[in-house]
Length: 348
Image 1: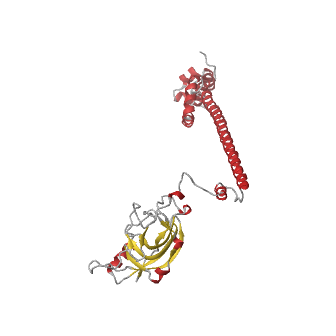
Image 2: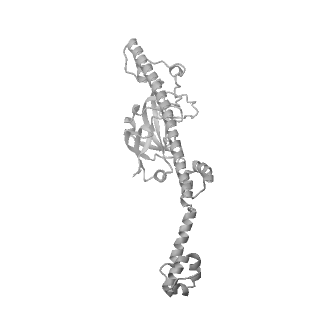
Image 3: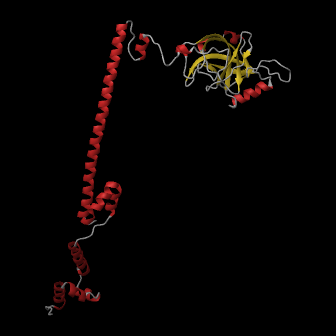
């Protein structure tokens, strides 16, 4: 016998495609555990030798589990007959993921149209008590949890079910109990559903409901107040940010004017640009060079003169051909060097 690597979900309490659901804890496993048969597509070993499909194996170690996204369900471990080539082929398809679905074959014992048991999308009654007859591997299951369901009659004959809800064996829901236009609740249950405490008398119910209504009104007022205050605070923050940005822009552009990077006539243009994209204007002005003043230009010119003639003798300047330039640019220095060279005053 070859055991599957993973356990399989056999049945959950979700609504299946036939419009009903079965309660897991209402399924009697006693009979199945005495004969834990695993079939293919609920097919019994009847027919000619050419069409005969024998049981695939067994399902062992049945457990009731509460799984994420599935809820309460029955799981088990498939074990396949390794002397049967067909059973081994199904085993291989289970292992490689080609086949993923199992199906429970149930014998119904008791149905209920209790509204408290009805789930969203349920069209038929809830199967509250049943026997597990067999488990099958199937190609297409009956609901989104990779599982299906089959029903058997008292003679252990499989009942053909239809996904369109036309299943005579499955009782229809008594619509009077779930008429959504008129839901009848006890005072105690209504109080609890509304978030209150359990009550015993009509007076307690009225007091509890009044408290709930008053609390709801207070909470509504609080929510409206908080929403208004949040809006007012956001407006103030926006105003503060606008003032701060305006001040930053004024400082940035005026500094560029003071540093002779732009002219005063360009101020309005750069302010408008900075309002649209402060970061890029800041980079642009930071990279701009300053235009020197007339005084700076004169100082730079004087400095160039000093560097050209500084610490040079008459003879050095003569060799460099700079005497004529010195005389035109700095006559006093020319005279000083002339007197030092010839020991006499220079006469124009």
